[in-house]
Figure 1 (tube, one colour):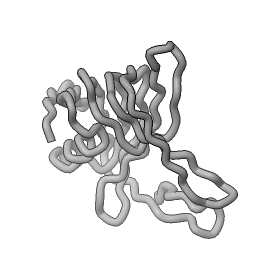
Figure 2 (spheres, one colour):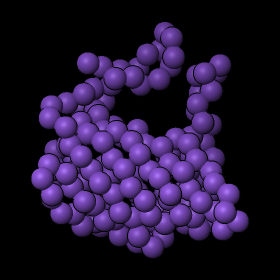
Figure 3 (spheres, one colour):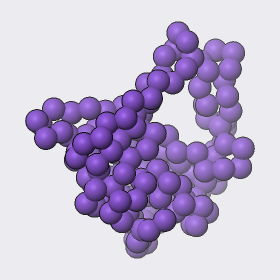
Length: 142
């Protein structure tokens, strides 16, 4: 993964290279820095985006991919772990060429231009567990 970072206090400023997979780059960065708990926020530009919509009725995700140039007007999320691996929970709002927006739970995106993020690690670790009985979601395990 191609990215650059700079540490400021306890936070990192992260710049992900053009044409990189956004989710994969954040995951690789968190593994490199051994970040198992934290927050992410930022903005950028992308050429493709896959969103996930969760149906509480079916307890299934429905994915939809958008292949167009868009501006990330807001990306926000958290970092935790599940089964010993980095687990990202990301939401995004993206502006389209016609000035409408789409957004939701982000599965993946491809950088087209630049992506500038702040990663704020928190001490310790927070895990996840599958709440198969009630919600069907991977919830925080404190």
